[in-house]
Amino acid sequence: MIRHSHDGRAGNYDAMMISDVEHKFDIILLSNNYQGEIVEISKAIQAILENKKYSLPQNKS
Image 1 (tube, rainbow, N blue to C red):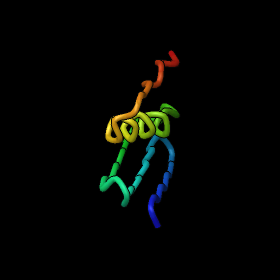
Image 2: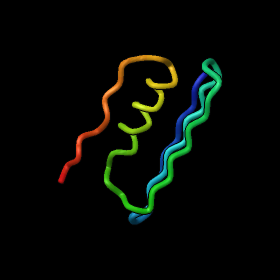
Image 3: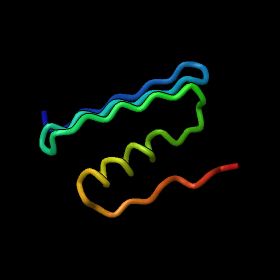
């Protein structure tokens, strides 16, 4: 297994975990205020760690 991701949500709580063996990093994001952006945030963090271009999620409000 090279990369594994898992997310979960309960009420207003949101979580995302990504383990990338190839690039040797783990990302764990936890939130107690669900905004529906945790996947986009994790993708931006992955891109930063892999020295790739990234964009941050835009505020939906």
